[in-house]
Amino acid sequence: MNRIVILIKLAVAIFPFYLLHYLLYSTFNQIPYFVSVPINIILIAGALYYVYSARKQFVIDNEDEEGMPVHLEKSSYFFIPLAAMIALFLVSSSFRTSLYIDNGRSVPVEVKIASEATQTVAPNSFILVDVPIGKNEISINGTKKNINIQGKGRWVYNVDNLNSYIEGTVNYANPELSNANDTISTKLHVDKIIHKEFFKLESDFIFEAPESITIKKDAGIDKVHTQTVLYRLPKALSDIK
Image (tube, rainbow, N blue to C red; front, side, top):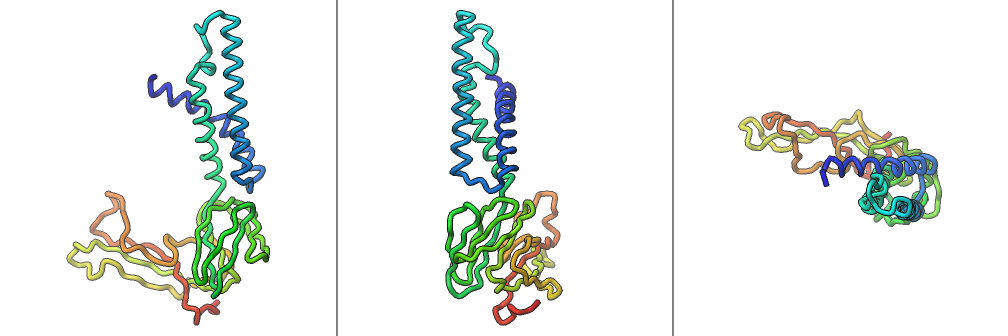
């Protein structure tokens, strides 16, 4: 089958599933996978049954398959499930984003967000979770609070507001340059201290800077490339505001 025809058929099959999932997720932003997946299965089963019964009736009416409409061809049995899976992934990922849960306590905490599974965050550590966009209820050891994740990006929940953060800049240079003394140099900015329980991460990296970065070919390997990093402040400075 011609590749262009395959792509067109797949796009046509994806559209109704995408529209249905979009309406579902925009109405119920916290719908869990164990609910959305069965709904998806029911939609697929219904679509396949429609194709089967319509094909059967077409053959009865015409005594053969000649002139079968495109949407009733046998390839529909392949395109429908594939399109549904692609649409589910596209929509669900667009309504979810990343949240760092940073535990500044000296003991582990049990964290649960909306309908997601409960997770444990080790002392003075963090986890990265995938959460629904919008208003969410977060439970820390049974104590519930509401947070509003306003759109895509990366967000930080600072348990009990125990940690403070400071943004720094990291300059990356090509070690082969004759005028590059260090591959990496770091500078902290005291005017960019954050002491909040919940906020959006604006820095390129969090907690530590990678040893090296990847740049585009046209970015210039002979230049210094600056990235921002959000670091935790030492506990002795955690009350800085």
